[in-house]
Length: 386
Ligand SMILES: Cc1cc2nc3c(=O)[nH]c(=O)nc-3n(C[C@H](O)[C@H](O)[C@H](O)COP(=O)(O)OP(=O)(O)OC[C@H]3O[C@@H](n4cnc5c(N)ncnc54)[C@H](O)[C@@H]3O)c2cc1C
View 1 (cartoon, rainbow, N blue to C red):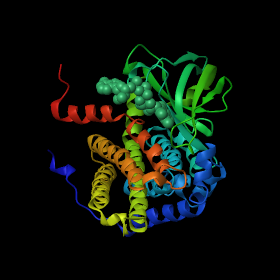
View 2: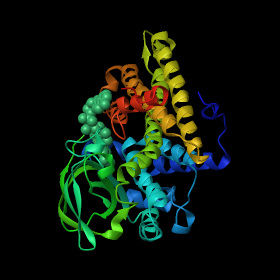
View 3: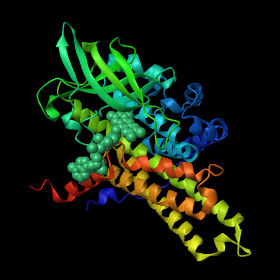
View 4: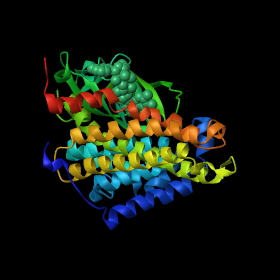
């Protein structure tokens, strides 16, 4: 194993401040309302204007475009603190930030100038459209097409489960411009109000109900040549590059859910009396809490390590996969334990742990399932075996 992956570091004051800012806003603007939003499968659009006023929507946007351009460790702390209050808001924020970073890294000067200021200001939210009804993990097999026409491209096909899809003003969409496989895929920055694009279905979900997930239909939507992000045929690689950074966000989201489970479990274990004692005095409960706290530390360390490597300009794909795999598994497992610690109360909407339980599961699925993360990690050790 390379020693470069064994980093030891402490958080800087600035990184802590970004985390504290996100926590303060989440507690003020989200915590009082989240149970109702979750029940109603909704959120107010103005929430993101409030987040942008605090500078959060432009965390990964350079200052020259109106952002704060903090490092990925700070960004991970912000996602975690928001997810600690609401995992749905955290994924909206994380996907938006992932696209800001992709435009900054892969876009040309014109594209950066056009999109980054409005994304940092919260006037626009960004989305990501790769998955299709018949291509999820097997993303190189997408079928939606972009065919050259005049000085642009005509888009046809279906995209499924786009986070922020109904609200995003722009999304990064992958379409087939060439033959089969990854090399035939190109990426585009598509304005949502382009004629020929419709929201076909808003998805009802088990959890993260305060985030928007929808299917988009493309029926002869024409985009200009200027919408091409990167070169023709580079789209699959661009999507994978975006997802590498995105996985730091989802690992941080899982850390936030796990931290919320720990907060709730510690409180309940001290307050709930059974057999004349607080239930936290029983080893059957206190050991669950001890394991939860240990796995939260491990998940955080893996997540911050991946973020720190990214900040140092070093490879972090495998470390990001390890962070997402571990943090999401731990969040799903300990959310179930948090419900168990709460007994019957945990199964009711009187306590938030039932929401954490529903929210945690998705972290094992999107931006690469746990099995896909295992493939990435295994290949780094074994290579591509026949
Ligand atoms: C709420 C939500 C939000 C989402 N947001 C977005 C978004 O914003 N943009 C976007 O593009 N997509 C989004 N997705 C799609 C998400 O990324 C995919 O669901 C995910 O990548 C898995 O693809 P799939 O659902 O088609 O499952 P499949 O790929 O069909 O996989 C089904 C099962 O088979 C396993 N599997 C597949 N291939 C292998 C293999 N080679 N080896 C071992 N196991 C394998 C998988 O791990 C999984 O367990 C979202 C999904 C949801 C539910």
